Length: 217
Image (cartoon, rainbow, N blue to C red; front, side, top):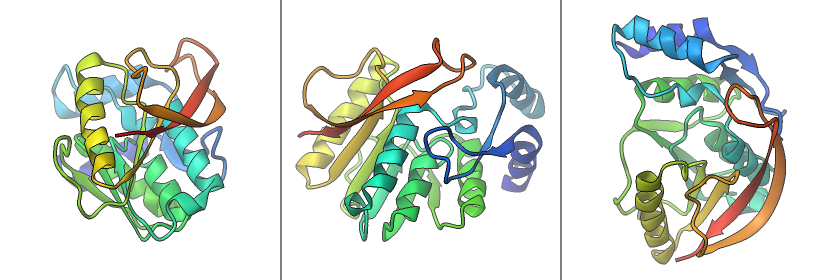
């Protein structure tokens, strides 16, 4: 499917909406996850596709976006990487806060298209790249921003090892997490906690207390 077709699909199945914790931004958001997931499979004539994480502002990402907008000095003038960017919420917040450049990376082609659409809605420039960058050095990046990646053990262990390596190479790494099961117990310094309104479509409760952590080497 072409990027044009993906953009048409996204526009047809989402609507512009402000995330609860970041009302100054706008994202193309789905109202329910299951119908969108089914629509994606029908459009591609495929099954067992990954869930459309790009269609929702997740609690960990909202916390990081809020923190960056409230503390723009963290990214102002910096080269920023938004890892597992989803909708691009964090990337857009970093651009709004004055980052010199923002690179959003994802492994989902729909997310890449959604990031471009959402950046346009918010009048910012974000470079979106479909690539698995875990285990790769990032010498041209000053700040890495991450939201909600500790929900599966293999991913959490692989990503955290990589992030600690980036810290050791001199990057500032901030991660938002709403209490996922595989969040490490050590090597993290809390910077702020935000109560994020959530939907039962995505979570098992109506609010999540999301912590913004600084990852240590």
